[in-house]
Amino acid sequence: MKQMIDRLFQNQDLSDLELVDLINNLDDDSMDYLFKKADERRQNVYGKDVYMRGLIEFTNFCKNDCTYCGIRRSNKLADRYRLSIDEILECCEVGYELGYRTFVLQGGEDSQYTDEDIVSMIKRIKEKYKDIAITLSIGEKPYASYQKYYDAGADRYLLRHETSARGLYEKLHPKMSYDERIQCLYDLKKIGYQIGAGFMVGLPDQTTEDLVSDLRFLKELQPQMVGIGPFIPHKDTPLANEIGGDLRMTTILLAIIRLMLPGVLLPATTALGSISPQGREKGLKAGANVVMPNLSPTTVRDKYLLYDGKICTGDEAAHCRGCIEKRINSSGFQVNMSRGDHVDFLNQ
Ligand code: 5AD
Ligand code: FES
Image 1 (cartoon, protein in one colour):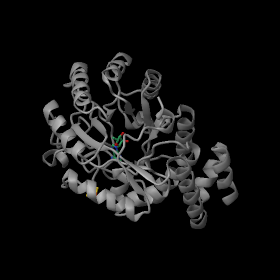
Image 2: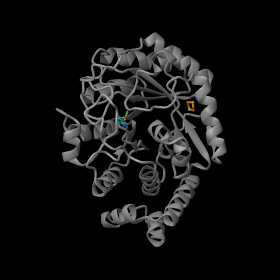
Image 3: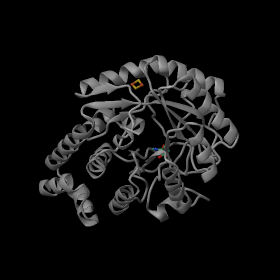
């Protein structure tokens, strides 16, 4: 096993069969070694820095019906909200004061916001704050819309591919197309965004081979960011009674992703922190180097519930800022509040 991990470290890749073998047969000793090598690789590229992103969840309306997601359109129990552009700007103001220099604007696929609304949101934030990056996470859009947002000043775009197992993707996403989703990622990349793909770990019926196909897809796409987290059942969805993903498998995959894509910006996600009290710390130690504390107003915090047991739903932005910093420091890392661009984008 260790020899295989060394080869992964060296070559930034293994064959699919070897990856399956690694994931399935990793004993605890070799797992520690895998984390050690992932940590070493992250330190080669980004040192001990952990990048902070302020997350603003600005709408939980969504036209899609993903079977795992708590804000799916069919969930009549979800308490819906949307923030106005002024409210979003207020979140940015609080965030900027706390030192954030990246704002992640995330929402369901809410057709109420026109392209003009999104463009004006981006322009107003960028006019007010010159030294920040904007990351959008608002789902699938036509090429022309992505281009408009980019021209308005958006820097990055997160669109998880969710799973690269086509059959599973189609089962989880009624009326959506796997090919269209992948096309969106290539469109975003072509336009010039720093892009983020990613997947959930422990989805119902997901096999190790499926996870390896996710790794293979990432290796091909070469995104600047990768967001992965455990699937966590939400009580008011069709997957309410399924078993969720676990900490061990998620951290193993984080480490493998760090080794396959050395320069990737890799968050220790809220979902990981939600399934285990030390989840985010363990993610960082396995090679993650980004955290995304919440900047949404506390009045709407407990409404953006994609899964059960989400942490931080009652906490002020300032509280999360401090909490995260303590966690980063106690894990042996340091907070970096800069824009935190991908290494390949730094000198552009
Ligand atoms: N469990 C874990 N992650 C989820 N997401 C959505 N629903 C769940 C869930 N039940 C993830 C998806 C989405 C991201 C914003 O949150 O991967 O892309
Ligand atoms: Fe929100 Fe710890 S990050 S309370």
